[in-house]
Length: 91
Image (cartoon, rainbow, N blue to C red; front, side):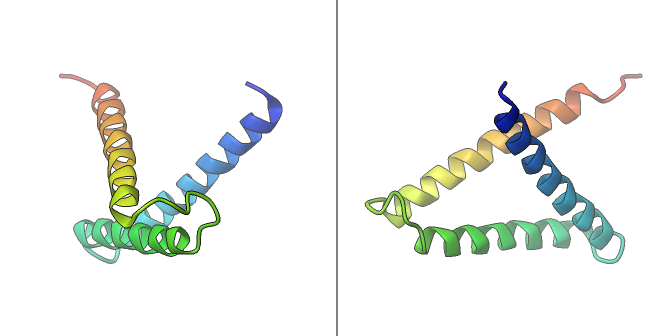
């Protein structure tokens, strides 16, 4: 992997870790299900704003965008579930 790509990936996971850290902190004060729902809503709101104000994929419809976001979320969710269940110690 090239140095610029490694830097982008490192930055990406730094941002991810900051979101998770903040969510964990909020989970100490609020129910985790509420924090999870708020994080999902915030992601949808942020992504909708960015999609409406996009400068690329101008021909993409809202339905096409929703399908793309849904597919990406499903892939990320399943990958994370798989990673988390594989790393659990067994009895």
